[in-house]
Length: 585
Image 1 (cartoon, rainbow, N blue to C red):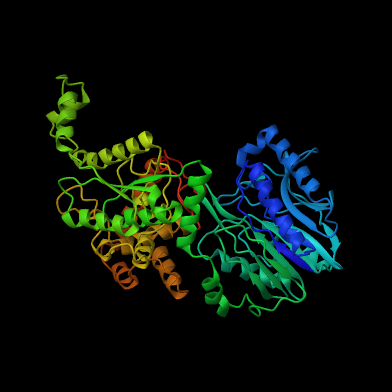
Image 2: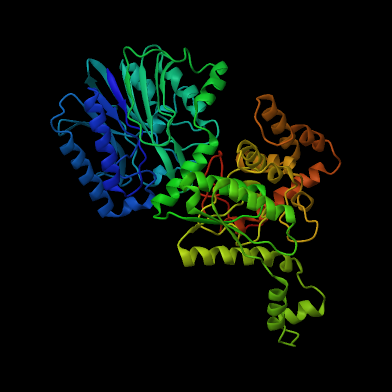
């Protein structure tokens, strides 16, 4: 059996664009004399469509596009087209089905409804879909073929964190199928390519072929890494690597050579990871799609000479081209000469546009305070604070950052460039940014810990060495240092990771978590030795609890931040649901 991998980049509601990609796949599969082409989950409407599907016109257009695919399949009697769409539920239950249609020569010859509906992390499919209950088995090229959709494969042998009542993969095995076509829209998180293969490959034993097709591309905060694969009897026959364009590779299930035998063995982890799409490439992909799918071409950002803005500037240049990136240097009286020089050198290395707009904040502070201090009344807040010498002088520092934000937004509004935020996950967790800093259109490194940002900076030849070697600082006051204000990032990264992603909330639990992470080779800090030494210090537990409390109190700031690429198990954004007003933290 010859199958075509329809790994394409879809957009919710772009029915015309999605149809164009589907047609290209059909043409490629037909030209290669394939027996079937498999597209991703919910190919036609796009994934995630979320509450758009409550609009009846949206569902109608989705069904009209399905009919257009049927029409386009005419004259291709050998080709089975497997495509995802939304179907209405005319009976009781949730209003829709997450469905796959099998189309041959103008007719829908079979339908499959997704049975296992995820409701964790970014997924909320039980909000919309009624679960299916029936298997779909048909004969293609002399093979007995079953259809599944994404989560349907993840309950095999207790593979996920939820105990679904059904196990479609096991039921298909009991029916003696030869091949399973699996349609997927599985977003990337660290290690996901290996996790998919490790979980799904054993389910192909003793002799079942599983054709796993996943979408790729950025969609709001999510990035889909593709990484479609074919396994047979536990062996890997095929794995895509390309994320730059739609992929229509052909795999012969009967004659393809085995790439990796017994692929789910732990000693194959490094091999799979080396073949997987890299984190940096996915950050570029997600930003590119967010910009282009939103209708923008140009980007603007504040470039300070620090490592975060340097990495964002590099990602931006790779995403849309350096001549479409506008980097603004905005030095104040506290900006060091080397920061100004480092940023300028970065811009020259990248080839982006450079601008310098000095920030003069002291006269602005004086002007504002003069206008605010006009009421000599004991009931007035300003009068009370000034009289008791309780003026918040940190505002004088932060207004430098706010002025920079103002200038970036003016550039965006005046010239039509999308503004980027440059904050990372560790800073966002602790609220270590001025309130407007993360309120632009998109934050490419929003879900990266500081050590991950540093790792990327070291790997990019255009980023001057001095940028990632110098101590991080907001440079809002003389001699200011990020780590003096908080804790060293080598410690902070690990605390944020443990608390946000794995819900570790006690210091003994944290030390146990740390030992476990290190024992399995996970990187959670830029300096593991320093982190371990800190855990034995007298103030370590108090510092740990102080940071947890800080993370809780900063929820109101994070809730107002812009979207950014999700790459971790739990990111600040769509998948983390914490109340703003609460008394627990």
